[in-house]
Length: 384
Image (cartoon, helix red, strand yellow):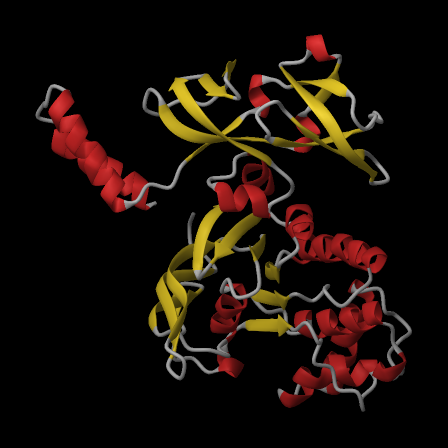
């Protein structure tokens, strides 16, 4: 990536009053003109990152760069970013026009230019003709559009959005997802979006950062995050998953539920303990004798576009299946899936387990000159 618009270099944040560390050595670079999402549960650190970019919080350590320049000590009003808050932070005693024009009036922009830019901004968010409307008389979706118009009127390099859709009902939230995405693409401005809603993140983003306990645990495109979760947390946090203990017998061959299956993953140690992930929508219901596995249907719910079926195999493992085919509670069905549907996750390895494995390797394998390089590469991979 050349010339990232935003960069975090070893950024940590600890609140002095409580001693709580909410960000732990965060590193990332954001490319100009893309839609980024910080995704995580409450307390994961995603809003803290947003507030540090905005200047509402200071980093305890590390550097924050905007367009290549360090901004740790740059005041809020001097940063070329604008934040859309969950509450929208609109002035209730002002009209739509006055809210959108507020920042331009502070800068003492000529009235003619203000009129032109307010008109353009309201057109972009589909609020033409609402200039004189009171904020108090707007719906939630309309208020959000005003907040977005106010954010883009200054043509900032970065727009920060702190869960701006969470207060909307489901239908309106879905509509606004389309509108926000289309607006970002049309403007070409970098959007940094904070949410705890996995479906929202998958639908809108060019790139997702999944956060947990102050760390970025995985980043990638929505397809990467969904199809190739890096660990148990990501697999369970992003969508529904069937996760089972397994053994990687060798490259492209995995064993779980007492059977061996072809897979598409490799590069692991022979007989390495792993976990397999199979998404509910990747399971196909068959006749019992035609499936790779047999399960007994326990319950099912109709979800509108599919049935959500819960079933159990002979080992007591629970299976969730999404199917357009209705099942019968108590019946035995077969489950079929392809090698591409089996996603392999390496287990988290503690430092003590790693050292024991290296010691075993030294004792049982022929030690060559490249052993030190092997150890360093392995440790780097584990730490990543």
